[in-house]
Amino acid sequence: MVRLCAIAAVIILCSSSQSVHCDVTIRSPTPNTVPEWDLGDLYPSPDSEALASDLREAKILCLAFAEDYKDKLQRIAERPDGANEIARAIERYDRIIDRIGRIYSYAKLTYSGDISDPIRSKFYQDIQERYTTAATFVAFFPGELNKLDAALLQRLISDPLLTKWRPWLRYLRMDAPYQLSPELEQLFQDKSLTSQNGWRRLFDQTIASLRFTVAGQEQGLDATLGLLQDSDEITRRSAYEAIAAGLSKNMNVFVLVTNMLAKDKAISDDWRKFSDSASSRHLANHLQGEVVANLVAYVRESYPRLAHRYYGLKAGWLRKDKLDYSDVNAPLPFIPRRQFSWSEAREVVLTTFGSFSPEMGKIASRFFEENWIDASTRPGKESGAFSFPVVPSSHPYILLNYRGRPRDVVTLGHEVGHGVHQYLAAANGALMATTPVTLAETAAAFSETLVFRGLLKKADDKNQRRALLAVRVEHGLNAILRQVALYSFEQEVHRRRADGELTEKDLGDVWLRIQKELLGPSVRLEEEHRNFWAYIPQFIHSPFYVYSYAFGNCLGYSLSHAYEINPEEFPEKYLNFLRAGGTQDYDELLCAVRRGHHR
Image (cartoon, rainbow, N blue to C red; front, side):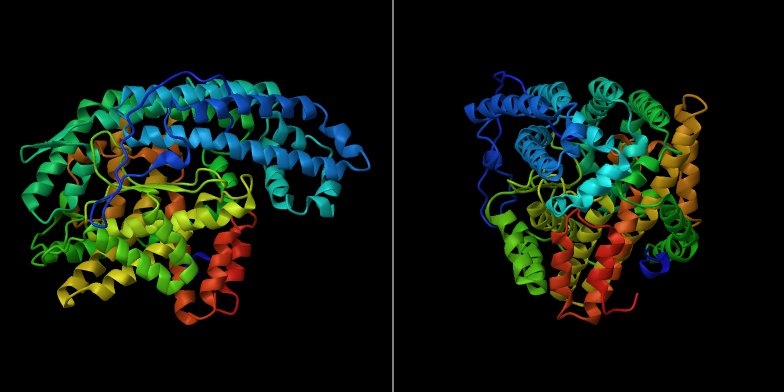
């Protein structure tokens, strides 16, 4: 276990194809043009014959797998050659997930390019419905493996023929206490379309439809949030007020979605016998709840000496007795803002990655050279940033909204760090390439540190370095302290939802209290801030994901320190850490990558 003081569905889809056409524009960028990705490595278009063919083949693969193995694993495992047969079954299962995951990934990425487009939305929903229908053909497999007698399964796991799959089987076994009957598992999966996925789609479309007018210019949420970092105080304030007003007009939707998803999760958790609402996330992260509780307690104790102190200093720099919330992420005054062209951002990322490891730099360059990145800002595009792993037989894709700020360059490094991690881990196959999000965020946080150092080297003068350091400090506050505050908000919302539906006032009261605890006496929080919880997508799409940012950033900083101590040996150890994917626990991986260093 790493001490806190040391570190500061199976995607199945099959059916006959239905014709659908989406206008997916691809731009081949010049070095200074912000790029849009080329999804042609997956399929030429949503109505292509290649996609239709894969849909047909997926159905054949799924049905054949079910015919060969459903209700037969116990008998197969008991045979003298049982280990060999089970190994072959897992290999087939792995290939099916890879093949079918390509289709789902294409639908997801197409949709992300313009959430507001009803044609793309229909395409994505149709794909989700098909995979949910088809999942019944292969969803039995993990559950049936878990139902094997413990001694028999242990014998199989110990067999050399299953050495490759041992980590997956071990992690699969951790799910056994929370597994339901096959019929209930199927019901939960079938109902997810009209429960979880339906509410999430409503949230996404509501967010995508929001428009805010600032200084006479209408724009979406992501662009307006970006104005909270503008150097002009009036612009920041106008953006803040526009966001507050826009959220307030839609609070009936956000409150309803939050209540329904919290109740839906409570029902699932109750059936699966999880001890609390965050337990399923801890299980997925291969973490003990006590580790997360210790992290949260330690970070919350640091609010006064880090967040409160920093914002007190910043109020002085801005010559205010208190900061308004619209000032919290404002740039330092009297320092001209440095803008980075796409070409400059690309150079910083590739230079810093390549200096750390030529192999890492070479992989990163493919994202830029082969149009695996969508960085343009446009109406309807999904807000925020992500690196989507797709499937091991393909490659990751990155989405972000690039505006040329230093923060955007660091975000680019973050997502390319994810992408390199996913690329290297792909060799483990579909079942073992995916890591817990805590480890995924560790790799991204370490990459951010590399890129920030690259930015610092390019700084022209002392004031520019001061401005960058302020950005870095604020990133740490947002990535660790703020994420723990968001986790605390989620915990209380889910806990209170057990006693009945929460009103807009209930949610706003919890939000304001927790934000005041985080930000301290030097930040003024007005009543209009009470609805700012509503736009945070992790609450909707990935409950309790947010603490992974804090966990990963702490570990990322720790690895950065290890690199400083031993810059010659560390890079190869770190790349081995990335290559491991989901085959090892975080403590095993960190012991290997930090071996020879003080903990």
